[in-house]
Length: 309
Image (tube, rainbow, N blue to C red; front, side):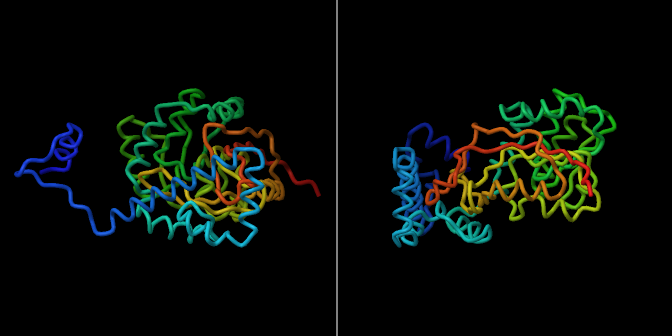
């Protein structure tokens, strides 16, 4: 019996016949399901507590009382980690799928046809300069969905080259989508150094998946991009935090970069912060460090200013 037939059988609410195969649960699958449910229940409980008066103070006291290792163990992949690699390792132990999951591709395809609330601040900032853009570098840009979203509103030049830097699976889907659209202004790469000298460097919904907080990467360029957009990115109010995003079907390790450190790093390169906006459609949260989490993402728009001696 095909998987699709089996799913239809379950959806219809009847038992498989003798000629139909029954789903076989792998050893340990039940235990893993129970463990996932326990982790999600505890994380949800902590979220509820932290939203109440003095809730964050209570969690801090528990963390500082010596119970932090036990709480971290109970939280599993929703705990806090010392590095992105550690967070990825723990997440993979529970659900061995991350950015390569088919849901990620489907999400990118859906976004290419829509404009989100947090896109409008970017459109507002880019509107005066859009006609002059010739090279755009889109770090972590999935299938190139931002290009389609922004081009619908800003009508980019036919001479524009929009380069998306992402994983091979996203690139393959992006090329197929562009071919279907007859779009020739998009190209794909896996080399972040190709952003050197771009008119616009944009990273939207992806900065938290990188260990570096952007400015070290930019500092290695021979010529800095003159405009930088960072959008849909979570930040920590204090020191950087490592946690895991739970997409239910897959788990993705992420890093909440320290916001102050990030802004200082960009300023040190000669960038001036022209605009900042909260992104309320998304939230990031480290259960054991609620005092450092904004519960929403951020967007920033920078312009490169001449450094005076």
